[in-house]
Image (cartoon, rainbow, N blue to C red; front, top):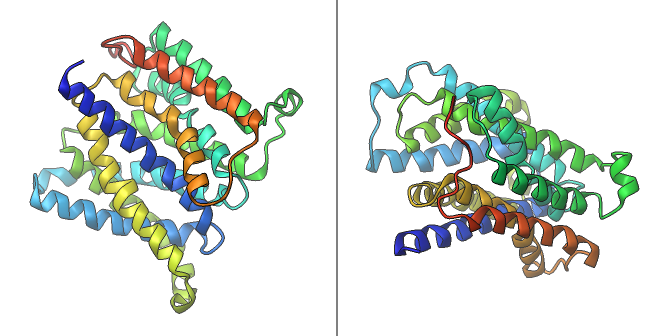
Length: 302
């Protein structure tokens, strides 16, 4: 393994830990502010951060904002995911939402075929199926009866819809991007989603007594803006240029394990021993995706 590849793996470890932090920390403030206004602030502030990075980096071009409806569409879908995530965290344990997050690659494979005609290889399909089994084990607490009856809690059911939105978003980006720099396109998505959220949450934002908003909300919001957006985006861009797509995607399977560590660090205790069976299965899926040198997530678009 080259030094560049080692750096790519290290950066993706950091990325998966940062993503897990949004699940664990989001659960702390889910009841302090409604999801719509909270995500409005998150998107608009993140757009300012990314916009500053664009200004000091590649810069903006007039052609970057042609067909601006693309940013509204992608931003709206991305915002839907986050709003549903924070609504789910009102009642769903962070470990459960993190487990459901590992289903994103499965749904992405399906939507990738529908939107981009991307074909998943046999190795990747097997790993995704194993990862899905592990995720379902965690969400349904190893209870086969609950799985067969689809006995999902409210939070898990809401987040499952968010997972579908996230899975649509990934191949949609490939379809909508017209050669814009990654940072520029991310700025457009965040601004588009932020403006849509602002329209929907304007009344709620006006009605908030900002003097009563707990400090923890601002701290979590700062984490979401700086770490879950700016730094994690850089990690993803850095690793994507050094590792095959399958290996980048594989690190999503570490999210439940990282969430457990986050929960322990926050003093919330660990999950029941049964949950660790599902976590172990998702780690097997991770190893399958990492083991083959040069593996690719999808065959070339047909």
